[in-house]
Image (cartoon, rainbow, N blue to C red; front, side, top):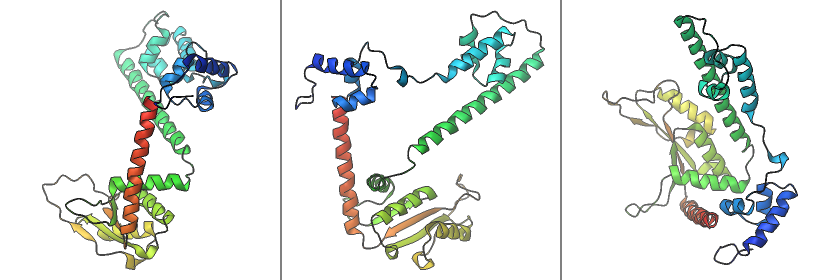
Length: 290
């Protein structure tokens, strides 16, 4: 299908196959996988002028809103009133109903301001609902992970947040520190995947001296499920009165340091895996660009 240099050969022949598959009702993704064409620009060139099959077309969620907005406008509602009713922006409403006659205004300035405030509140509520839905949908994409996926994620996580050997400080030790409990839980799940024995783990809390140290120590102990003997002495960070700290309050629990004993071989595996992932990503990116 392609030359060794990555350029597509016999474009017209390839386009003929792509068009035939499109007319059979296949989606772009299906055609991509069938023909092994993973360059998006090339796919669009091959399918230029060919309409998408009906089953791939997603309904526009705003079509119903547009129709309802026009209906309300014809009933004499203003932009503000329509915004309160539908929760969409006044900019969208303006585009949808600008060809319709303007209603006669029958309200005072104070009434208009109150309606505008309610409209903005409705817009904020709609936007928040959309944000939460996007997050839920994204979370659902990762309802499960394969061991290989978890391994790759853990390698990237460690290389971002873990200690690394430096030319000026060549030490191959696996040490990870973070304040996010989800990051710690993810990291511990990854170590479990790698069969790191619990007795090789050591934990240390790093926290400002003005915080509730005992509560933080208890929190991390419960989260990790580690024995008290696995926890070393807590490191207290001095707090300067001039420092304008943001990490305060009940939710502040400092950072947890997780060290793996006898970890030189594990460190080498992490470093090698990371550079393998980097190389694979570069090759994939180059293939996608050609």
